[in-house]
Each structure stands twice: as C-alpha cells, then as structure tokens.
Amino acid sequence: MPGDHLLAGIGDEAAVDLPSQLAAIERIGFGGIELRNVDGAALGDLDEQRFRRLRAALHDAGLAVPCLASRIGNWARPVTAPFTDDLRELEVLAARAAELGTRYVRIMSYPNDGLPEAEWRERVLDRVARLAQRADELNVVLLHENCAGWAGRDAGRMLRMLAEAGASLRLLFDTGNGIEHGYDACELLGQVVAHVAHVHVKDAVGSAGNATYVLPGTGSARVADCLRLLRDSGYSGALSLEPHLSARPHDGVVAGESAADRFVEAGRRLEGLLRDSMPCAAPRIAGSSGRA
Image (cartoon, rainbow, N blue to C red):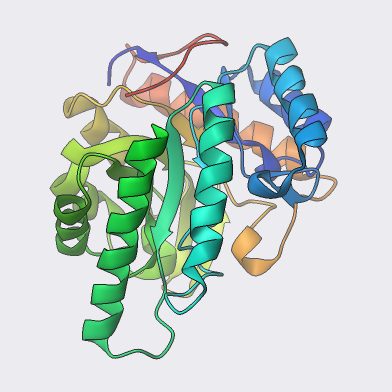
C-alpha cells in the first residue's frame, strides 16, 4: 500500500456527540472522520442548522471526510422496505457529500424478507441499478459493503451487481465482517480487490452470528493479511477504523463512557499493524481527501 493514504475513523464508534467524536480522532492523530450518526441522529436526518454546525466543526478541526455511511439497503431496510426511503436519503447525502468534499456513500444490498431467492435477487439488482443511476446524476459513487444483503458475502454476486450497476457503484471492504457472517473475508477480498474504493478496519473472534470484536490484529479476521493484499494490489484509498468494541449500531449499542478510550486504543493498534506489515505506509495528514 502506498504511503500516501488517509487514516480515518467512524466517529460514532467513539462517542455519541460530535465534539467527543472529533476529540477522539484528534487523540489518535488521524486525518479524517467517516460520518454515520452525529449527536444520536443519522447524518441524513440532521436538519440544515445542525448540518451547518457539523460542517463548520469539521472545517475548524481540519478533518477530511472520506465517506458517508448511509442506511440504504442495510440490516434495518430489507428488500421489501419502501424504496422511496432510500432514494430520499441518497438525495440528502449527495448534497451533503458535495459540501463535505467527498463523493462516496456507503450502501448495502438489502436483506431478504421471506421472498423466494430469485425474486430477492431481481429486486436487489433492480434497486441497486436504479440507485447507481441516480447517484451518477447526483455526482456521487455508491460503495457496497460486504455486510448485510444479497451480495454481502459472495464475490460472484458482488461482481454481477457491479456489472449491472455501472461505474457509479464500487466496493467498500470491511476486514472484520467475515467472522460475523461466516466467510473468510481475506479470500473474498482477493476476488474483488480491483473494485475496492474504501476500507473499514475491524477484527473479531467467534463464529457466524456470534462474533466478539477485538483490537485490530488480535483476532481471527486476518487483518494484517488483508492490509498486505490491499497494498500489493495498489490500493491508495482511506482506511477507516470501525472497531465495534463499544458501539454496534446493528445491535442497538451506542458508544458509552469508555468508548473513546477503546476507540483510541484500536486506532493505535491499527497504526502498529501498518508499521509492522508495511513500514513504508504513513498516515496522510489532516485535510487530505483520501480518495482512491
């Protein structure tokens, strides 16, 4: 992995309120923050006044924003949920992405809700293609995460979805999701790495449906192997810390009093992994864009 890349973190993994999120990122010395929930509300639900305050705070902190994490197609929005909710959120986040200096919006590929396999597949492919078309019109790029949904754990499905959706869809790779969802994430990465535009870093032990999250490099997710594979493949985008040590939105767990300390510890472990695995890799300074 080239030395010129951005280290970031998903802010609500460290704290609920924005000042504490920014303080945790500053303690590690990372140059970016990925936005998901701010002051207890999803980014797409903030009113304009709260969003303006957020934008000003990020400017004052000198932090880049590599990606916006949406709820589109995620674990809470199965394929039978209203598609209008996803289109509405995309509209809002595209406008906010432009103001925050990023083009990336994270999505997933819709968990099933009792439909036959073939109908689930066709609905997902149709929705994602329509989202990608609208994203192209709005000048953003959707990033599909290897998590919840039809294509969340299968490289062949990811590649089919990419082929049908076009250039406004790329991949977000999360190093730790394979443990929870029952697959070897590093093996999956090897099949799709050319399409990866953004990376989340976490680690875990356990088995499918029963993962316990641990510091990066101390679990079974082969985080160091994933980082080396990304490096050897020429990946130059951001590495965004999402440790799940204290906050796990899919389980309804928000960051508590000790979350910031654990988040900072995880960030320092990530820096150690980078030093040990790829000594030429250095964090990008605050204010850089981090785009692949």
